[in-house]
Each structure stands twice: as structure tokens, then as C-alpha cells.
Image (cartoon, rainbow, N blue to C red):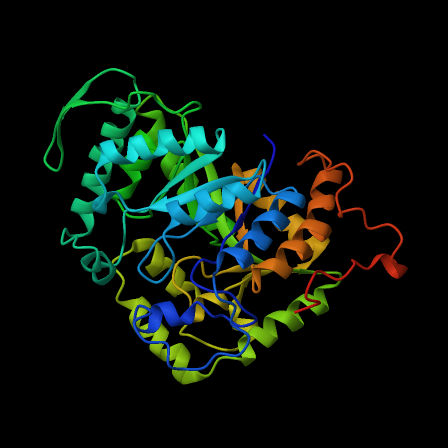
Length: 396
């Protein structure tokens, strides 16, 4: 089982601080607080990140979904015209889209991009955000609807008229004239009792956020057991940030700089909002922060696993922090548990893609976890002391 690396497209904005905080304080409704160095998510900047990810050997890029960011379908199909091989892990919410239409969109997307679509199904753990889309179902019923949605999508992809009668969807003769080829892999996450059976029945890849290895092991064993009882196997992925440098000291200094841009009021405000989330996965992320402390020693919750990002950012709230070899060690540790897909990100996303791609990827390749990347900038041979060349835009 080899490692599959993916990067992240910051379609809600990027920068040298934890800029995602604007999305979780009030849902991105107001942005009157000036944040220095924020980069707009225009197609030119996002294309730079996509091209860098492709050049550095990432297999795909994840694009988020929400009212605080650009639409993932439209943005990525535009970026596909700027890349050749890069796959796009498109996040979308099944509660706001017809499953037959989604199946048709995926089929069209595959033909336009020559098979570069991956699907990330986001059921939604925040009722406030869901109501912005007109969705008023409670947490568990949203997962029941997702199960029906995916049943319809896979049925419609069968190439023949498909009928379905459920609580949430009733379809007569559902069809995509030309099914997608290949069928997009379905990525799915969820830590609640309602989410597990949906993952076991429908997911190709089950995604977890970057919890400590012992917690990830428990979660993967849970999904494996549920899938086995259904006669299925599920592969696994993890969503985590990364801060990788030529030395551990440099990496932790960068993490400290990100913390230095925060204040206790900002953290407390974000934690109040995140603490009200219905998402069990989000609750598990909040629990890792240990009361919203800005103390690095309390935020390193496992070797090289830092919970500082989650002080103000919803969703993925941890980062792998350390030297290139240390970050590779942690990836290998998760890989030994059965994690195959690593969906990574960092602030800013352009520079951090280079730090990881030129620093960590060659280490993983040398260990046999990745194929070598001929001619890639990962060859770190001639710089004095083995230092990596500066990424475009310089160090963070």
C-alpha cells in the first residue's frame, strides 16, 4: 500500500496567518477586521497552487465547500484547464443538490477533465451553515439522507434507468446518458454513530481529521468492522496541516509565529462557535486544544502533532510540525495504521506546498512509500548544508 499525497486549495482566501478564522467567527458575513497579507482566492493565485501541487508530485487537491468560500465545482473545472494530471477532490453537500444532477455533473466533469474527479461528500455538522443552504434536517437525518443520496448516485451511474423510493428521495428512471469513466472515488468523513454505517456502506475512502495515532487507530478499526459486516473493505485517508522545515527548530518557530498573530479574545470567540457544533468530529478536534491554550507545550498533543490551527479554524485543526524527516516519520506512523491518502495543507498554501514537496516527499520516496519524481525540484543535492531552495515568495 503506497502513500497518496493531496494538497488543499484555499478557496476562502490564503495568507501568512490563520486566515480561516474569518469563516468561523460569524460565517464570513463580515470581514471588517484587517488581516495583513491575505491573498484573494482568485483563479490566478489558485492556479499557481494547483500548478505547484502538480509539479511537486501531489496526486490531487481538495477544495472545500461552504458559504464562506468559492464553489468547488466551478472553481476546479476552471483550474483543470491550467493543469494536466492533477486530480480535484471536490467537496459538496448532498442536502442541497439532486443526486441525479450530481451524478450527471460528475459524468460531465470526468469527460471534460479526462478522468480527474474525486468526490468528497460533506454531510454537514453545523445546522447554522446548513440553514444558509435551506437545509433544516437535524444531524442524524442528514446522514440518513446522505446514504440515500449515494445509493441514487451509484444507481444512476449504472447506465440503465434507476428507480429509488426512500424517505428523502424518490427517483423514477434516473439516468446519466453516459456514465463517468472511470467512476469517481467517493471520500467521506464522519465520527458520529450516524456517520459510521454510511461510510461502511458507501465510501471508497474514509477520511478522518488529524487526531493522535491511537485515536485514529480506534476510528479505523471501527469503520473496518462496520464495513466487514457488509462484505466491503474501505480505504482510509487523513486530513491534516503541515509545517515542515530543514530543522525542527525552524518548524516550531514557524508554528509559534502563527500563534503570535492570535489573541485570547479571538481564540475564545472561535472556540465558543466551534464548541456549539453538532459535528462529533469537530467536538473531538475542540477537545484536543485543551481549553484554547496558547501554550505550545499543551498544544503538542502527540509527537510532532500540533493542535494550534484548531484554536481558530473549524474542521482540520492539527498540523504535523517538525523537520522533514520527523514529518515523514509521522506520515509513516499513520500509514502503518492503514492510512493511504494524506490530504495536506499549510499557511500560506503556495509556499508550504514547496516546503513539503521539496522536503518531505523525497524522504518518503527514499523509504519506498512513494515513487520517485524524476526531474522534480525535490532533488536537494547542491545547496550548502542540504538546505532546500527557497519557495516562490520566500520563507514563511
